[in-house]
Image (cartoon, rainbow, N blue to C red):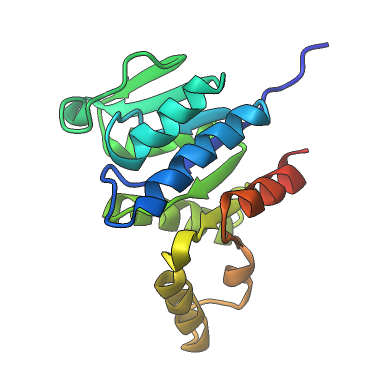
Length: 185
């Protein structure tokens, strides 16, 4: 009998950010995924937090599944030593392939691209299109303003209270590991 290897999609910045804790949490996340035998699914970049999480996952023995659109191969320094590298034509294809190859979604600190990816999977969850866990790694309170915005959206009547329940929040990588183990085992 072959066991299904669980895969965790990590959305995160293609930049390092100002706080060194972000890079440290990305490395810890990569190592944690490997320690649990989970495959990393991510945007295939070798820069910023993307590169940090991938290198740490690889160094600790994790399989890696990267997806990058052709127009970002140079800009995000497409990482070519991954277990699997998929090159897509568009960003939409990239997001779809990443999502379809993951059992859970984790969002580390990042910018507009990470927010785009987060809101897309959150909306799909809200619409009942999937049941995959979506977890924010709230490193150093990075996502606190986003969580306030979600509460505001609910309080202003633009979403049901259930929206907040579709978002898991972990304050550190240890908490993230606990949350993922509860959902993936």
